[in-house]
Image: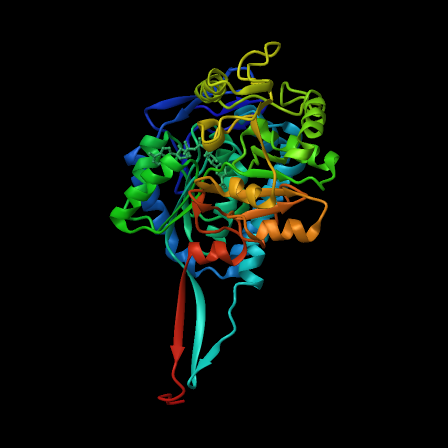
Length: 487
Ligand code: NAD
């Protein structure tokens, strides 16, 4: 199988197992959402390739687990350096593969990929310690021991960023890794393997099995040789993963979907509120954290809607490789149809589609216009289900209590955004919201020292800082008695 040429960058379409490129007899097609063009055929793994990868990762584990944290950190820093050196290649390949903005990949996402490696490498060296403490003269010593082979399953909306958010702490913890990227965006995971190899990561420490969820993914999650499963994706898939993991009692970490609220209070800076609302269209709405339910205090709703409409009309939709573009396409046709289906049903139920709601005709293809749905029917799917597209709903409230109740009336709990000019009011509201992250007068500020994850159906566990290591490591307590020593 030949390497692909994707936007001038050479990408290996095969798996990366035990430091070798391995092809499968079967392949799947990878298309660009930008224009539907075929990018190439990718190796389509299944149980056999998973078996090879688990073998390779298990063989590599003892030596990697024994490698000093400092040495592991040195290699992870080298990976980060190479990510920075190859930033342009990574950015253009990711954009071509998943349709997210080239500008964001260059300026935000790929630098963040490098940071993921540096941060977790340094955290393991400098922060992953617990001071010994005494119990009736006995000394407790807590350690984070490498756990084994970690299976990582990731989605397409921020492929390399989300994958490395798992790969980096797992490797820093001393685990070996098998990554199964989403079949809609398999390419940058392959480039990461080139980089890892060049950085001197020993063979078998990082493995990538390409393939479909129900084939490669399903084989991976049920394999008894796996010690941890970290999954980012949708709730229905998480339930399949949880069922398979139950068979071997494999610990799971889940980062799942959302239907986050953006609460806009009557004392908010209206321009700021409008800007924050527009940000919820980021990545063409394909962001788990998006505050897609705009909850606006009734007294300011008319002004807000007017300003928001004006502002949203200026969003430049188009080819994500163009640096002026602010919104690109949806990932694939089924996803586009799913979004369209939600909006069509809301329309036929009598909801007011204030703007958008259809394909961008000038662009065609997978470009769905930014959409606002006013006063949707309470409890209808448009306000309860995750749409994962550029579709916001707007509901109004009278009191803070009503706003909090509406915000929490969801099966999800990933994030919430509060916009208010009154700090104590905002903090009082935030304290009553059920979600893993609350942003007050801001959005998307993310620090790897902070816990990240979802409440309710938005996930199980937290990632970031020591929370990541608590999952990827075997946390152990050793108790030393004060006596019985011969020296
Ligand atoms: P998905 O659940 O369809 O797929 C996610 C991954 O699971 C893919 O790699 C897929 O191949 C794999 N998979 C599918 N079926 C499988 C099976 N039977 N066994 C094992 N693996 C299987 O999700 P998606 O459409 O790729 O991503 C969108 C979802 O991800 C949204 O719900 C979004 O909110 C969520 N997400 C969450 C976060 C977060 O941090 N909370 C971040 C990004 C995306």
